[in-house]
Length: 163
Image 1 (tube, rainbow, N blue to C red):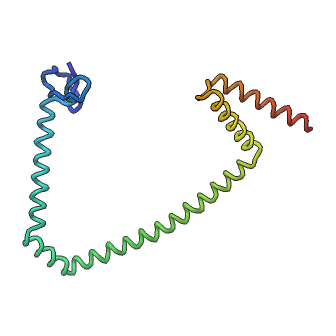
Image 2: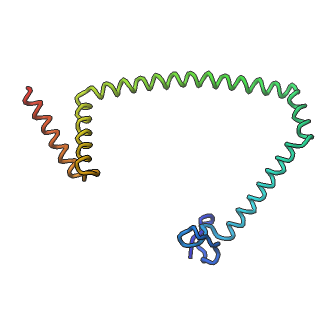
Image 3: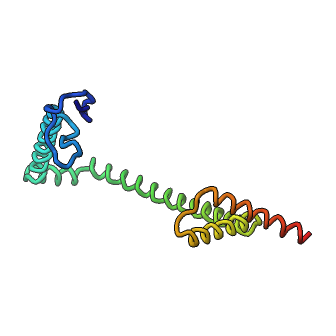
């Protein structure tokens, strides 16, 4: 028994097509769902072909050229171009706003990196990298935690000895 991925109904294995690429050697959808899918696909391909055939015909080309000369099309085109210009101008304003935001982020990041907390985290990260190099792989979390505690204690001792 196997469940069809399309309809979700549990069916016998004889109701599935064979496929060597799958682990169990069967397709993921049942024969019935597969048939429905291919029928719909054939219809959509036929529809695309008829549309393609019509668009390459002389009748369509004549209609299109007459439409493009009409006042209705010219009005539509002016309106479309006006909307495109507005969107372009808005996108420029958006880009400026994003740039200002990124500049603020850089400033905040700079302030953090130059603070005591930022310096301590950079130091801890560099020590973790050294641990990885010594062991040859990612160290176990217990070792990292103990190493971090030792580093924090050393930092506190240095601060107290300065005072």
